[in-house]
Figure: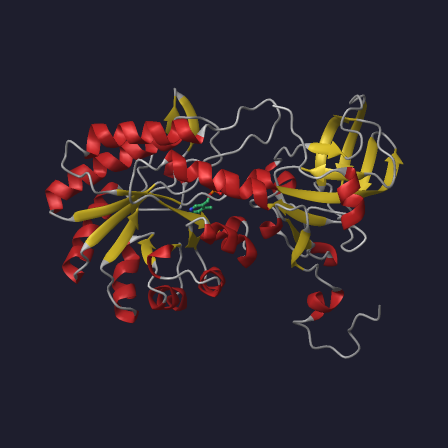
Length: 420
Ligand SMILES: *Cc1c(COP(=O)(O)O)cnc(C)c1O
């Protein structure tokens, strides 16, 4: 599918008068329309709830948009909990899916009434020492082995640090039951960024089977199955996007086949999607600063891996549009690079693009999730602003760019300040 930016060159030229590049910009209209598709896909399940994975795009203005669509928050750290609290999410609107959890985080999550999702059986007793038992609690499952779809290995749960083995899971539910928990949830995250119809349905079958078995065996009541994240997006133009309606329908079939005959027709489906909810609705907009021609041709831009780590970290593909040259032939071969003193700081390697000149604006696509949020400060590079493109075409700054003063804020050293 052709990838079209949601901003034009003219819009960007207007925006940079107020907020210079680089910046991340999010498309509120796209976010809301997609959120409504997700709700429609699972409307067959009256208890359905999406908990947006805050780590994907940790900005309260974004959380607020999603809250207005009825979504909750999936948090995994103290600061993410504070953010959810600030936008008015509490109680069962927060899922606390953490691992290696510090005591302070458990205490905060319990104070907010969040649903606690235990990553490991070893956390249950320590939790009960410091925080009250909750009516509803959840455990994370790791079935081990490889996760395959159509004989293709999608991911390797056996190598993943998350969740409990099935025997531990059984023991964990027994323990929680004895502590007085009334309603139980089950959670698993077995493959990341799946662009395949089958992921949620297969995961759902695995979890539904366990729910049916443990309901019988332990006499406990499961109130929800949390399918977590992992629904992917087409980063490459030749990939087909996930059809969320079809995914919802396949999960419904599994529900009808496994849970309903077991008399478990009141189980709610929860999800914790991050990438699918926000990924396509964010761009990193950057300006070409320097062109360089040595053994290869380089387009050097004012953003760097500190603003978007995925290409450097995972060699991830992010599509690039040269604004104003959308219809020009892609007849030049470039590496598009940032300015870190790190040779992996490349947004694209050997990419065919229209001829690029200094001053051109590039849109790096699909940066709405796990983009800004993975930013860091290597080489003293500063995190960019985050902007929101409103449905009426106006632009709102939802996070200002860092300044050198922010970078120095944790240092108390004479004379260290930004003189600009
Ligand atoms: C990262 C994460 C998610 C979101 O994953 P996506 O791939 O962005 O959908 C959901 N739940 C948990 C526990 C996670 O760690």
